[in-house]
Length: 298
Image (cartoon, rainbow, N blue to C red; front, side, top):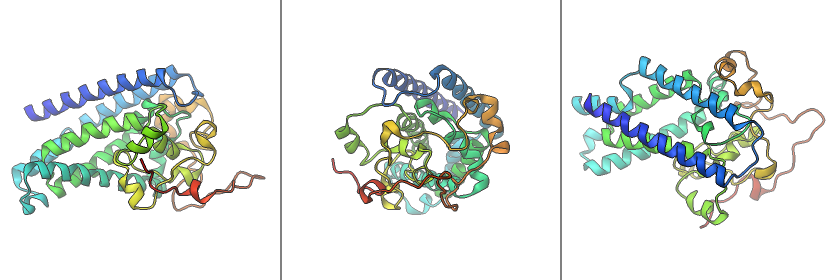
């Protein structure tokens, strides 16, 4: 129990620190003009993440770190048979769990029932650090269940799982940030980590762009698995953020976020559906370099 309490304190401290840093950085070096009042969005997005934390604490008090401790105590998981050094097991756990999160993200875009939950995240009319907190409680519970299953299957070391949890929270706040990084720095960072410009493409209202750049932490999976898209077709300043079927500020309010999966239209966003341009409008022609850029060279 002491281990779990320490892990929770570390996660909370890192979360609060990174959130504060990102809020300040977005104020000093914004990438885009925000469409919706920042106070409205932050208040409701923070309220949602607080509700998520309460739901997870009540339904799954063990958490991912607790599952790792349980696996260590009982000798469960693949890593037990590999006899890995502790540091190597921790590193491999971070990489393996990041791949699991990538695949889970693709799954939530591919299955219409899961997309209903995930579109709460995408319905945000702007993208900034607070968007990285905006997930429906049911999605958070399912995500935690998948993560715990992966931890038990791998037998991932508890220290590696804790580091992954901290890293995932921090990078989610960073890559959703409305932060204007110099182009050269963005190119270098996205060789390893997902940058704000890289992930913002994923929040485009165009389905073909929404269904790209699924990585949350490591950028490698998008490069290796063919889901990388370098830039939005209309550029970062002109691109439309959010979902085509939700253009009303109501989607920024907590009660609408909670109800959205049950009353909202899924649109043409699930991966297994084809994109239809709006009536009377042809889809803009795309150059090969815009559609699928090569891995950036720093």
